[in-house]
Length: 238
Figure (cartoon, helix red, strand yellow):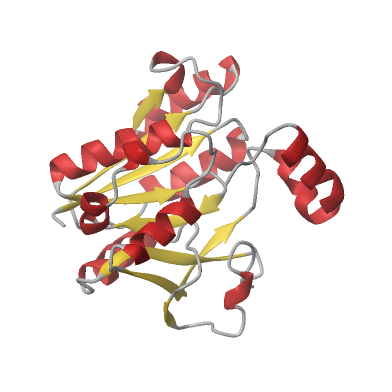
């Protein structure tokens, strides 16, 4: 793993997304790296704000409406594009979602931890709330703070590094295009390929869940309504 490719898919929720971007751009990273934000059909106003931010903060910006007419979410396209570029560069692929705020050393430490483990498929930072308590999607890790967990449960892509070895073994062009999200599938594929997934509960990142898709907040506020929309409207296919 010679370098790090960092990506953030963005769908509106511009204030939260800008917090994410600023934290990544200001990170203390010694390994060669690139940072690309994928704008997934944000409103014209928010797309313009992202373009202005890319100019001011010097990150790569891809407007997905220039690549596809498929409606958001386009996570599959993002993963396929990012995998291709990472493989060409022998780079680890680090996904930082747009509702996550990393610390200055998060990304370098993820890289170092993954590099130190030749069997690593996915290295993930645990998510916490503003008070520092472990939150969704890693609630199952409560009580295991400040550890390195050889994780048999699925890893979230909130803040995760996919190693070159995983990228070589798992072809994202073969993922099911009928799904919207792929962290569960790829986590299981990593284990099936003989790799290990590590969750670092000693490496917390702040997570404000579902800022870009507020309807998903119903999962906690009104779960019956959430699952009704999920199944009747074909949303949130995992």
